[in-house]
Length: 73
Image 1: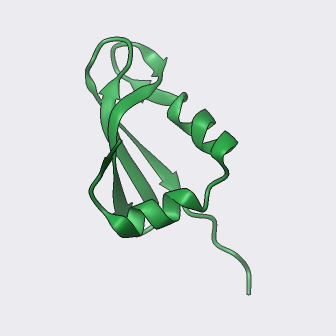
Image 2 (image 1 turned 60 degrees about the vertical axis):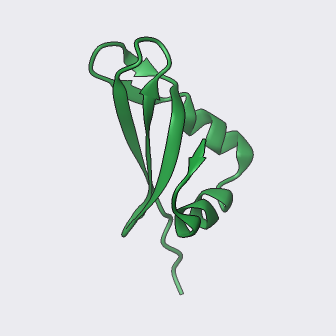
């Protein structure tokens, strides 16, 4: 994993490790459908964290937006 955005890293670390693993292993690739993202970087987005990386199966660029949970106050 390449660290690009510390704010994104903080958001990512709030997600339980088991859920992080499930998210990384459930990314859409136009060539392979469901795949694992590898060589990814984290990017802060308004609604969560954007993962940008490569498909583990074919090497194409893939991405996944992990939405932040909004807590009721």
